[in-house]
Length: 204
Ligand SMILES: N[C@@H](CCC(=O)N[C@@H](CS)C(=O)NCC(=O)O)C(=O)O
Image (cartoon, rainbow, N blue to C red; front, side, top):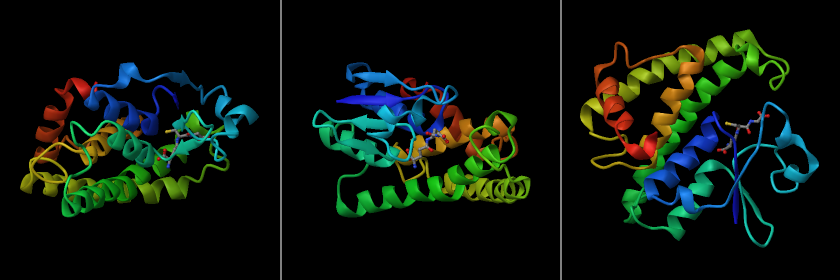
């Protein structure tokens, strides 16, 4: 199998951090795709990733597995330890709940804000809609407060141990820097959690 990924891109980073935390990143065969050069839109790549996005995990039988969370789920099954997606049915559901909350309510708002306002995205996001960027910005600012409150109640996003939900939030905070959004300035719980995440070798 081969992981098609891009550097400096949040979804590929979700998978990279997941594999680094598993300790297997260096063992995986990889191919770098340049988004800025449009390599993800070439017919050869679209054959495994019809929506022309990275990351894609290309399996030996030619199957193209996309969606970062699905790729992580596949690797979780291949490399069960350390567990990052839950063991019991309830724990699996709670971790998925928190991970999807981060992705859908926060990560996606940063994506909408960035893609609709940043000059570097003008080629990829046509048309850019400044009004939509403003809506996403307001939502991102609000939901950052929700996660700050959560991290005041819980050491990690999904409970008392590190999981994929922490990886998704860590990537989201990094993604937000592209629109100069630093919610840890003014949110003490988020700031303390971020310090701990930044200290993890797997999240570098
Ligand atoms: N839902 C997908 C999203 C993948 C995605 O949007 N990837 C971005 C890079 S972070 C991409 O390929 N963008 C290319 C483009 O917008 O043309 C996932 O979870 O992997």
